[in-house]
Structures are given as C-alpha cells and as structure tokens.
Amino acid sequence: MTSMPVPERLGFHLKRAEQALNAAKNAALRPAGLTVPQYAALLHLAQSPGISAAALARACGVTPPTMNTVLKNLQEQGLIERTPHEWHKNILETRLTAKGAQVMATADANAVRVERGLAGAFSDEERETLIALLARCVEQLEGARSA
Image 1 (spheres, rainbow, N blue to C red):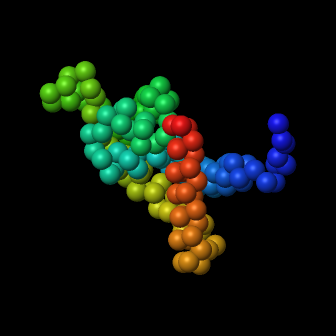
Image 2: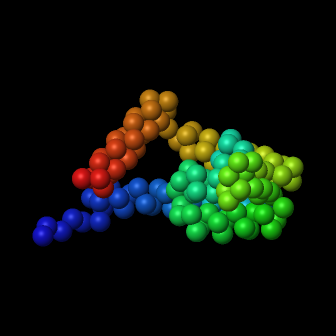
Image 3: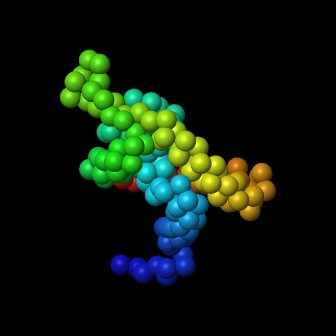
C-alpha cells in the first residue's frame, strides 16, 4: 500500500474548507440563536413549506434521527409547527411559524454575508471554475461509492 502525504490529499483540503465555512456560519448565526443544522432546516423549510422530516434530512445532508432532534429543538423554540398531513396522517408536515420566519430572515442575512465574503475572494471566472471542480468531486465520489 502506498502512503499519500496529507498535503496531497484533496479530502483533507475539502474538509478544512468545510470546517472553516461551518465555523464562520456558526459565528454569524449565533446572534439569531441558531446552529448551522438548524439554519439549514429553516432555509429548506422556507423554500419548501410542508416538507417531511425525511425529505428535509436528505436536503440538509443529515440522518433522519439527527433531523428529528433539530426539528424538536426548533419546535421547542417556537420556530416551526408540525401538523399531520391531510391524507397521510402518520406523516407530519413542517412549516415555519411567524417567529420562525423572522428568525430565519435575520439568520439568512448573516449567512449571506458569509457567503458573499467567500465569493468575494474569487473572480467571477474563479468562482465558476471552483463550482465546476467541486461538482466534479461530487460526481467522482458518488460514482466511486456506487461502484
């Protein structure tokens, strides 16, 4: 087996970038009283009201049990409401409350500042290239996983 030095491992660099982004977003979201997973859930709920917990977990890239914990915390804070689906009574639909929409708006403004700051570190061409390269990473890794 051939060893690979850490600086040559793309996964190491991707993970460092992800950790730095999460740390910046956690700091930006703290005034709104949210964590990154809670913000991600609210963001997707704002775009897809009524989405199920399972679909929300997939959209946020977390496990269903993790999403259930996130949703429980958001519900306890009065940011979301969960009601039985009209036809499928065993499925709960999740929606933002008025308070949740207000907290989401504040949190999103802070998160967008982080995103714009990151984007501002690159030229338009560099951003397009980075997005394409990251998409290629995803494609290759998903292909390797299913092979």
